[in-house]
Image (cartoon, rainbow, N blue to C red; front, side, top):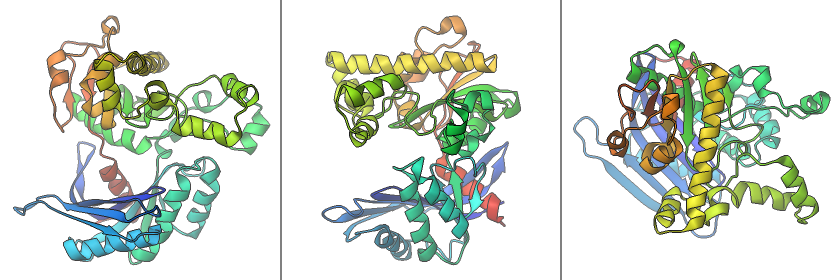
Length: 412
């Protein structure tokens, strides 16, 4: 299947977009190229919003970037500006052969285990699921509604972050809570970053020259949000994020695992309200809470200058990664590869080395020279002789969303 898909990732005050030409699948890996990519930020905030529209250099043409400030009080104005940017700076959406618009939706609950064609019923379902993802689903839904009006002539497809984890078995996705209460409120592990994980696993298999079905892999998606996923035979069997994206690894502003009793203690003895606790967990914890900075690069800089809080933050992050890596290797019964992806996983040699240090006894070794090399291509950073391959594989979420959307609507 092939065709052009406009991928839309709508946040609370931003719209990221990418026009992707999907060209096919090679050895299980979707192939394609970016025709244009852009971002509208500061939507609905004081002052002007800002749009950046970039066309990569293709077919002998030079790359080009257009930027402008604009009045965007809401997502409707932002999407209208995006459509205008395509018309003014190209490529023209009609001439590009647009066959679908693919939308990233964070939470699909138990209802959506695969990408789905957008209609009024799906919009209603995404709205109902907002209780499980209040920071994400409302913005995703707004993007869907506005984009359907702005680009009405092609089908729209929702691609859910949680869908890849629908294969996690009950023993791994069930919390030991009162069953009737948990079922009534949809309380279980759902997992996130599924689109990212789905995009890197076949690429990792290609690097290793082995079928996905033969591999036991732990994918470490390390960015401002972070998660670990155990993938056995191409299927998610364990994942660190839970009902919400708060659980699991240490993140930029989120703490990951915390004793629920500690949260009750903060409510009772600390005098926090529920809203204050929500703010603490989503916006004031993680690296920011430990080191005073959420950007990993700044935390590493401070640690290098002797800041003890920053050094501890990096140690806590690394410890939590090893904790999950060991647990998931045992859950799968073996480990063939560790795959690092996303902003931190792809770009921080220091975090990679720190997180995987001391694991040679378990076959996990990082080659110092390979780890220090920078590349935007999938690569092995472990010695060729090490029993467990350590790979850095750039995530390709937009191409994955475009590929999955095309699978729903069909392509040329």
